[in-house]
Length: 331
Image (cartoon, rainbow, N blue to C red; front, side, top):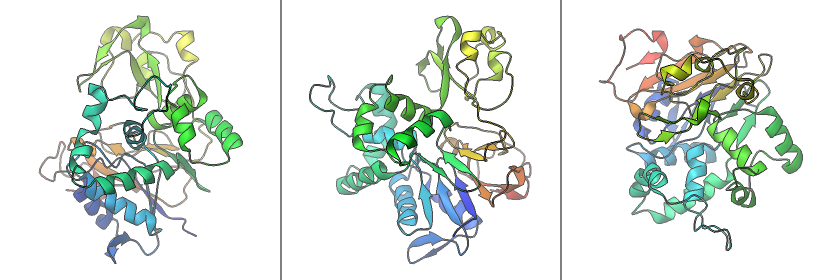
């Protein structure tokens, strides 16, 4: 039974970078599939969309999973792809589960373009996405794409006795106020909070948002800047406001005594390190010329900066001193 895992964050079509990261960690291609003699990969989802080699990334990851050399959970982009490509049921008032509006179409456009001449392959990957687990719990750690909500996960396991979702559940999740909608949103997109006073902000990618992403770990936040967790900062007049009691009640907490947890999703851009003693994010903005990162998990209860490994997507685009990342840096 494997006890040594390499947990890899959001790939977003950066297939060549994934190959370099795997080879950096000692994986070799044998009979067409990357594998390690004593370790196994867990992919945190979001293999598709945005990047230059989505088809190649999906094939590499899928082949490793099918051969038993890796596992993968569902990210919000796999979930979005299912919804975008699935017709809604009659009487639902919509054509597809995920509306084909400008924003949603833009998010998946690169994937659909790269599969335009390979429709059967895309259909097969969509079927595979539907079978992906939402989360994994190993003896010494947990993985989920965006947020581990113990109450929601416990309720789901009691009711469905599985870490996977079926198409009935995905259809039900279109209603964002339903249990299915809340669970899918929380686990694949994380926690958020409305901007105080009903305001809005424009993100760096041009979207106007009324909500901001929040931390689900840490103790006793006092102002809104203590709880925000996204690349775009809050407006100055909001960030230093004291958190209202109503908003404080919205904040989820991952216990400091719980098993180590690994997530992706959050587009970090500094040198990889744990977010807390038992929480690590492995999304370091690969597709934005950042890093594709992994954590080499060997069962430790306290996470260590020394266990991160990463490579840069473009070896000629380095945004810090060449040796700042220490011995785990490549590129």
